[in-house]
Amino acid sequence: MKKQKTTYQLKSFYMNQKGHFMAKREISYEIKLVSQLLLDDLCYRWNKARLDEQINQAIDTNDTDTFMELSHMYQSYVE
Image 1 (cartoon, rainbow, N blue to C red):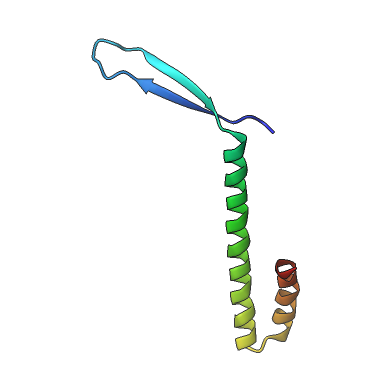
Image 2: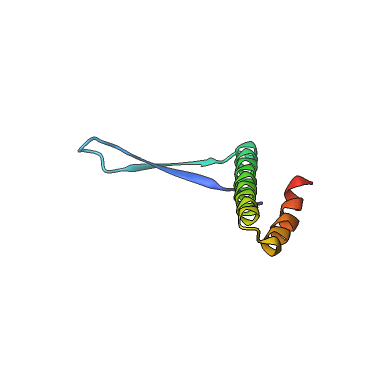
C-alpha cells in the first residue's frame, strides 16, 4: 500500500517575513484501517436498507418477479 502523506503549509502573519514553512506527516495505518472499515460498514448498511425498501415495495405491489430477484440479492446480506 502506498504511504499517504499530508502536507501542511504554515504562513507567517508578520509583514516583514515572506517565507513559508512546510511540514509533512504520514497518516498512520490504524487511522486508514479504521476509516476504511467505517466506510465499508456504512455502505453495507445503506445498501441493505435500500434493498429492504425495494423488497417491501415489491411486496406491496405484488410484483413477484422483482421480489424474487431482490430476495436473491438480499440473501448475501443475511448470510
